[in-house]
Amino acid sequence: MLPRVATVKTLNTIALCASAALLLLSFWNRNDLPPASALLPQLAAEPAQKPTAKQPFTVEYSGVRYAVEPQFEYDLSGMVVSYRQHDEYSSMHRLANDHLNMEDLCVVWGSTAASEYLSDISFWNGIFTCNFSTQSRTAWDSIRLNQISNNHLISNDDLTRREVAKVKIGDQIHLRGWLASYGTGGNKRGTSTTRDDTGDGACETIFVNDFEIVKPAFGLWRVSLYVSLALVVLTLVVHFRLPYRPYA
Image (cartoon, rainbow, N blue to C red; front, side, top):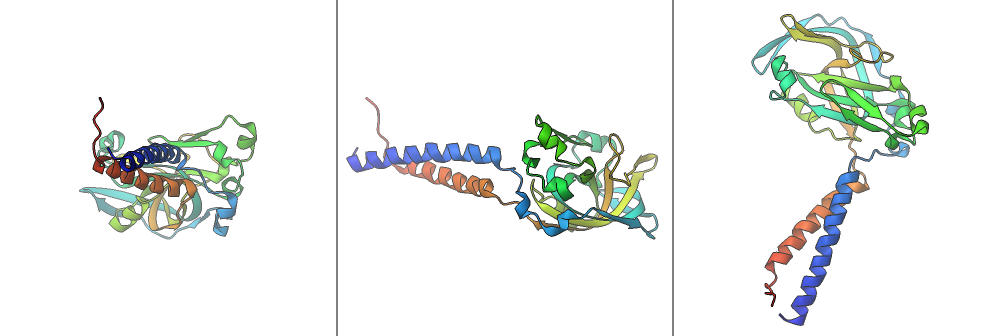
């Protein structure tokens, strides 16, 4: 093998290893939450809730008819800290014949979203719950439990469902709709109507009329994730295009 080719191969191997390491590191940190300085002003406000004159109605989705009972108009701006997408194949929803629930979003707002210790808290969604924990007492004391909510989002509108499906951790979102109960026959899911409750039944069930990702999360780790992935692909292409050197 010519010396120049050997040098290129060595440098390419180093670049491949470095970009692969950066890819793993970026993937691990891709869900870092944005700092308080990156939050939109509307996230400082509490969710707006008021009585509604909307009467109960029915909608159909995936061949199933659902009865929806609106209780309050609801307007929420917040930052997504965890989510769980649902589809017709997830066991609990399939058994309940519930295809209207498209996604659960765990959202924070107010001083909790702006806490400098928020990244020290781990958030994750169960099938019907938002869970969070931390080993830092300071981080725990910096949040308000009534500024964290798990939201069961329901809609039969395909455009709305596609927009909700784009959500990533750290996105700042705005939604409007009705706090509502819904179900089929005797199978009914209710909704919380206050942010001060906890435990079973504390989740907000929202029939979504408008949904927007106002400010997508796109921090340095996500940038480096895409850049390092591109570098891995490029260096692999170079690796396999270089002349093969058999070992003695």
